[in-house]
Image 1 (cartoon, helix red, strand yellow):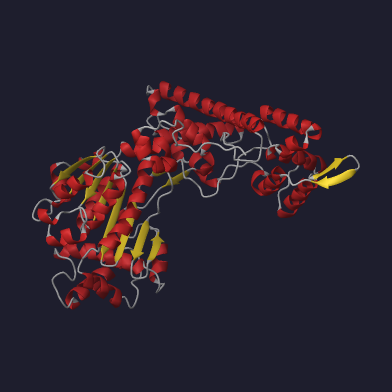
Image 2 (cartoon, helix red, strand yellow; image 1 turned 180 degrees about the horizontal axis):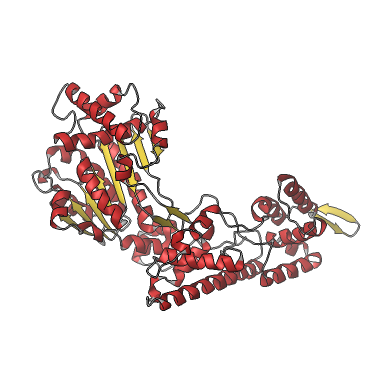
Length: 545
């Protein structure tokens, strides 16, 4: 049984200290993903309980640097719900204390602290946030949040907004445009191109088919299953006007033809061998025997105006997408991935077959890269804008590409986004969409009244009434129909008085850090675009606006 090495895992037994430290995550996002993380710069607004939990989960895997923007002094309440704040430092800068303790987790990470508010920073230096890869905002009043969100949307800098109150919390991603080349799909089907093999592959497969009858039983049982599929596919096409099996009935019959191949004649007796490669061939029929096509998600990207109408200063993603689109127009196919799944086979033939796929993939990627270099040179741009490794990775993942274009906070708050998901949630009594909007109403309450609802009124009745009015107004502005019977939800949030529970912050902070890593590495598909955590019911819900 042969196997291929996992990408991103060092092959040498003499691993570096960094490889040993980050071994598990390198298995998830590889060396290039780790490099992207190490070059990233994060801005964390407010070192609250959830803010430090997010930073902890970014510092440990080795994010390049972070800056905490926090004007607050450390209080006894902060020290009581935040593991990264020392009670002995009460009265000192909350951001400074959190930064110092967080840096102890990883000596390779750099940290800084700015003891100012968002408003003060923007007044003094409006482009302050343009140097960051990502901004995380924790518990910012609505007015300040919207001002910041507009700037980041214009700069195409991702914004992750998180908030917790008592047993509730939410996370909201604002991403204008985000490219994902390595989506890491749960099920990846082999791309063998057996229905239309290129000359080198066809010659090798046919040569193996010609040898089948003269092979020993052991050699026959260790024949790679693509050879078997190719043989029986040719027999099928000869009997079916050169068509391949396509529907369920035809594929079932095709599998029966393969199983009949297990009957081998030895002398005058027939016997049935238990050959694993035949079983693998049968299992692969549904995923491997098919007409090659270009998935809709990939075609959408290749036909996007940013790719088809390429301008001279285009980003690397669109440069590669344009070149791949041109390749598809010329070849009427996607570039070969160059990957071969594990299979029951002798090593020699597996390596031969793998090399054929890899060589073709290299040829396809090389032709695409040459075109990109010509384009860059003709526009007086450095060829370093796009690396050959980026092109190969794009070609290998071309069936699974994703492009995320999100909704801005401003559009959501003014009814310019899609309200269907939230409206459906509001109409469902078991949905947590209501809590998301109530927590948003809390942010507006803080902007209007300068305090947190329930923080000053022990009975919270007056604050509940104020918050209900704000909630109703907020729903109408967002194009939503305010639900009936929301008083209990609003009263519950007021009762919390803005308190943060560490357990809720730890859970939601870990989730938010995962989404930050997805955005920074450009791998895995981030949420789109709201997550609500209800610790009362231990339920996590997602919504899209």
